[in-house]
Image (cartoon, rainbow, N blue to C red; front, side, top):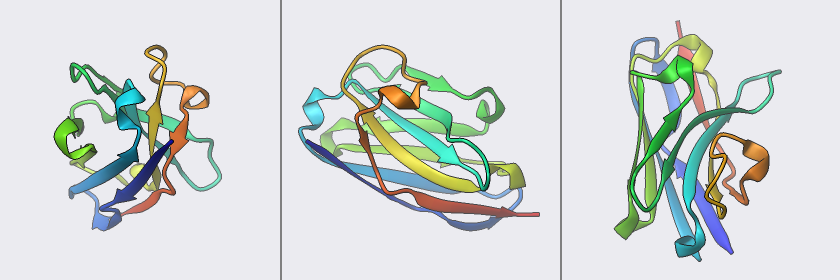
Length: 124
């Protein structure tokens, strides 16, 4: 079992920055990918970024490339999402997720564990 807790969300003006954290506990050694997903009001959940825990290989949604950076500290069992140049369309609840299998890191249906989410609101 793996438990995930997100933190760092809040209200920020367009162009600003936020750093989200995801603290994992339990059998974290069994996971291959850690990912960030988001759900905007009235929209489907979508992939944002993912990272492989063993080698740090990363994947990003096209619209956040160059603005968001995912990183991890395996010793602390923590994954981060550094968000810069934020836009109003980035407003959403952001979820941290963990995946046991080592393939398809962008598909939310294949993730095994989820946090409760943290709200990010970007004002114009």
